[in-house]
Length: 441
Image (cartoon, rainbow, N blue to C red; front, side):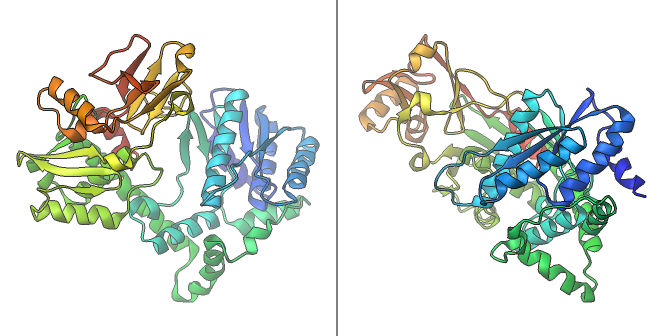
């Protein structure tokens, strides 16, 4: 009765390298339909199904719901795992943090179980809601493209096989198989933007604005986005350089000769890389920066999103880290462990630490981590001495460099004070900016 659901599953994992696939199942209608359809298909294809339920612990019944999924998996002879989220006490954007935690927990689980592909249960309705929500936010091409059918996180591939299937179709599939799903109470709480959108979309159909048309627009935006991303990446390769201090320079004449959309993307990508934030800088601030470029009114410089941007020698646009935005001195061992490899995917590297999203500090001995601190040098007299040792080094350049402190003494700085116990290297490169633009970052 529902052969198309099995076909969607089959098409998602036709290139599966091993004989097992992971499923993320919450107990809601969409994910349970994914579980049932995948199980039916897997039995015919002799593929092992492994199921994970992330328990965010945000509701009193979340533990019971995870156990309900476990019972269903037991009936279907599928191995089930419950992944609890150990959240921090204070979280500003709970939904975004929970979403990110879910993907990271699923990624770690997949790696432990040697799973290369994890399927998610998002439906066509989810896609239409996402595109409409992004439209309300004033998003650009990437936001109006909606959710991708496939994405990677730390080398694990995530796929959404039901992104073209309506929610009603998935739930009717469950009804016909006498399988009950759990309704999340938050799906009815209009304090959440997605719930507001879900309730308003049916009322807009009398204007001809259907979910199908929203999704169709998203598909066209995705095609346009792909073209613009590749074009931007090709053009930045010819006009961007990075010096040994991690400062970025753009060839001004080449940059001003580019199309406006590409200019905006390049500026956004560079500023976003310096800030290290998940989301791009606000369009309004990047647009203002570009307008200053075009009006030739940037000689004094401007700070945007944690970057100081200025024109030097009239021929180059210089991007430096905004000194005031650099983190305070902290224990070296407390830094985030560096998690990027050559392909831009995340992977754990022991004794490599990320500082200010710009520098990798590679420690050669774990014993060295004890009592060492890292941060920028604030003493102007010391900075002046460093600048004098490097001909032409600007104050802003020296002030933005990482320094390793041992009992208030500076024992290491990139290019200035060498240490046998650690090495400094840059996070960003010309190639990494090409890849950022290819990904729409």
